[in-house]
Each structure stands twice: as structure tokens, then as C-alpha cells.
Length: 278
Image (cartoon, rainbow, N blue to C red; front, side, top):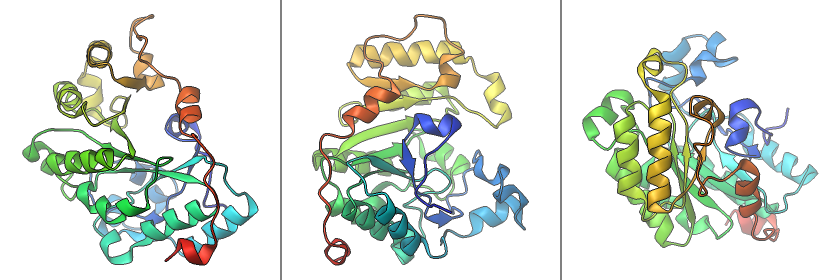
């Protein structure tokens, strides 16, 4: 089975290719949907077991190199990761994310990481180039709310510090405003981070009863108006767009196709595998 894969459904709005190199995630987010889908929902221990350990997938590096050897890249970005977090606390021990990035680069792919790990990601900043991207999932601005919903993830200010560091290093940055647990907080995040974030991907809250109590049409309209006022590029995911009035999106809205075409300024030159892992 290929570990370098093409996402489907809602995930396809985020990336054309992805790798999930850890099994489990110790951030312990209460809203996490992954433990509710196969094969995780049928695993012994359920949600608590999923959040107990973040272990590297068995044979992940050899499998990834085999996939890349069969289908080298041409500058496409590979997202790390959908069903786990590349910079959860356990990565400090295993350091698998660094090797995954090196392999992808060696075979002509660019990368984009999506994480709540904050400044833990700075350990790999030296690997990132102009074709890569760094992204953070942002939910709150206050530590108390973040700690309640995402107990082992980096605190909001730490995530913002990482975004700013990558931006200052010349790496494209984006923020995932999904899930939205507090619409006012999501708007505040845009206000707080817009000077060092290049793109906002805006969604809603799914798989949780709180989502039924939020006025998604109003939130979507307000988020669009704010991005337009600040002159920031944004992408509204299909499920949120469906709740909004027709014609709500402004000129700063970008499509998946536009995002992906902009992500490939040039194909990454493949380098010998041994050099890539040094």
C-alpha cells in the first residue's frame, strides 16, 4: 500500500498529495475526528489509545522512498499530515518528520506541514525552501481555552511565533481555521496574524455537537469581509461555503487549482539520497 497518496473528499481541498508518517497523536484534541474513522475506530482502546502514543508507522521511510522512486515529484507539495501531527511531542524523540522531508526533497517533491506543534517545528527550519510551506491550525488566542480543547498542543502564542519565524525565513505560511470552535476567536486570529500569514483556509466544525449551535453563514460572511479588508488571500472550504449566501466570496478568494498552481514555482532538483539525509 502506498504511503504517498492522493487525499479524497474534504481532505482534497487541502493538498494534492499527503503522507501520514505517525500512527496516533498525543496532542489529545477533544474534537479530533480521526479516532472515529476506520481503521482507528475499530482499534483496541479507541480514542484514548489513539492519543496515548505517536509512533512512527512501521517501515515508513523505506516505504516512502519506494513510492518516490516509482513516481518522482516535479515540485508538487506533499502535506504532512492529515491523520496525525508531524510535530507532536513524540517527534522530538523519533525525528521521523525530518527524514520524511529529506526523502521527499530528494525525489523532487516540495512539502507543506500542517501542525499544532508550534516552535517544535523550528528544529527543521533549515530544510525548508521557497517551494515549501509551513501551516498551523489555529483555534483560540487564549491559553485557557486551548489547553481545555487541545491539552498537549502548543499554546496559541507559540504557534504564532513559529509562523512568524518561518515567514521571516522566506517560507510561505498559511493558517487552517478549521475546526472553528469560537467564531469570534477565529476572526481574532486573522487580525492577530495577518502580517506574517500568506493564506487562510477557512472551514467550520464538523463531527461535534457544538457545530450545530454556530451561525455558519454569519461567521463565513464576517471572515470573508475581514480577509478582504486586510488584503489577505483566503480559501473557503465547501462545507462552509454551502452555508453562505450566493456571491459572498470576494476577489481575494482563491480556488484549489489556483493554490496548487502557485505552489509549484519550480520543480525541486533531485539530489542523491545519501546527501539528502545528512
